[in-house]
Length: 387
Image 1 (cartoon, rainbow, N blue to C red):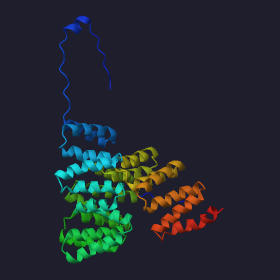
Image 2: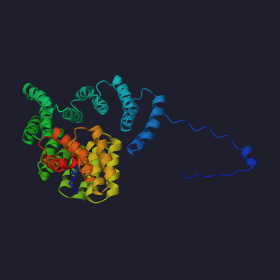
Image 3: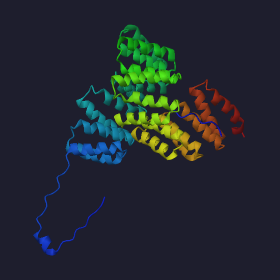
Image 4: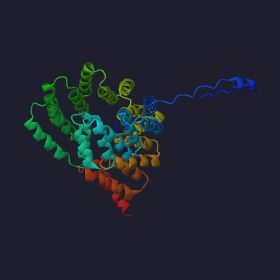
């Protein structure tokens, strides 16, 4: 079997009365209709449980009662996005931005909607409007990477850094671009510059931990996450990343505890569920892992790593049709994600669909020309595809 790319990690009570009792009964008052706020609270519960269609119905009723409730519109946008009703999601977010034009979080979410609709320029514009929100910048970098234009963004922020050498956020942003390009030494240097100018800058400290983790220096990474958490115990990304490093160390029970803490702090963040799914995947709990990967995708249909992990899990259990479906759906939202192309090629190769496998290996090499594994597999199966 070919190697798949690694895990990117009510009771009803009936009462009977006599006719006399019915005649004597006093009519009960009508049950009061719920308010918009009550409907919002119900919708929040349903949404956090992954019941997005129920949440949408509640939120639409709340919006009809109080069209100016921005919390209702914001959650409605989230739910419509998860249900892949992108036009409706954009409409809800725009209502919020009409009243709160500087709401960085909503600009970031609207950018995600535009990205899902392949409106890349509009997405980039919204992600830029979300700055300095760190999540918004991460999405901006992802959009440039998907377009193959990350070098342009690097040049832009390098010039900004030259003109604003004392701005810690500028150093952080440039560091993140270097991190995404796997220029780890340059990324470390920029994060340290940011921390030198603002020692309590938790985003930079957390990002520094991520670099060390990618370099295999797991304990050094964890030390940085601990420093972040000591300064801000509710910084969920540090809890999640700590869990990721523990997965790499094989300390699965401790990893579960850290990831569950991240989920407790932010139950709407999809990647925490995806990473928790990786733990259960490694522990051999197929059902729990599938549940968690799907939970991540309910919260964020564009969580590309969850598609990769779900498909890889199906592949490892010889469920080729399900693996193929997961990888194809992932590529629908992330067409330049190398791991998904490679894994789909492996599935096709396993099914002896050599022509389709060749297409996917070539897609890998078009994005990552130096991918040795894809080149080797392509050389192996191209002769078979010719017959």
